[in-house]
Image 1 (tube, helix red, strand yellow):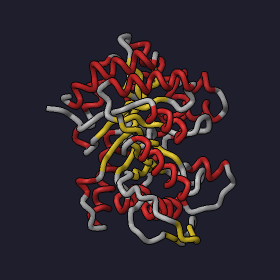
Image 2 (tube, rainbow, N blue to C red):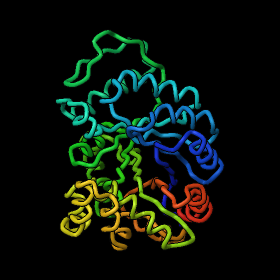
Image 3 (cartoon, rainbow, N blue to C red):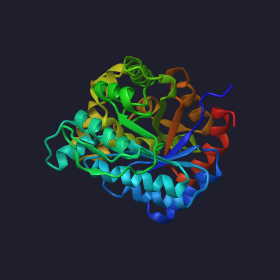
Length: 336
């Protein structure tokens, strides 16, 4: 019996275009159902999505996620409509606030209101209704009436981790994309999905139609130690330092267990932070090891309500890891 409906894949956004395209083409020929592109400070997620959609024929491509604080919701809607049209409906728009952007840009805003306004503007424009659309919100507005974009079926997913954002996802979104800083925990995944479902029911929505996806830090190799050591680099310089305390608590992880990693990272001692990551932390925070070990770890999430795990592949060799996942893990997870 299959564990999941489908399995997605993702790669770091800072890959050069040649390496990215090779991985994208591999994904389209493999057993993955979707390719997810995150947005950081190195590359444009929508530009990479354009490249990916033009280089594939089968796989869905999602932005997971981009922030309305980087692009006005009207621009996001226009880009989503364009990408959906050129791909024959294979594009998924993933939205998230990106709290770091608020701090970095010196903004004073309400994240929840920003996301609500963004959804209403995007959904209002991605419509085939004959009337024009305008909107006045708390953070974002569209004062001059605009023509609809005639693309009513573009899926809009939310990326979030806190309870209020999960509630909003249940109220309006087509899907939830759980962050790499939370989905590693079976306990958190179960909590997040249950919260979204409860919110959907409060708002008279059919929760069975909401998609649930989660990113997993993934390092796969036939050499177990090689995969584990590579995972420590990822965990020490991103995942562990950035994980909220309440997620750690839900997972039963005492914060003092990982303070050695956080403190070294915050002091700029990245080598020390990596060195402080233990094998036990790798087991808790990542999908790392041989294909059979990674399969076993992902299978633990079967009873959380998760529909699609996204294997965010870091290495040790991305191409080899992606092939191992496609050939030895995905068929057993999906039965396809």
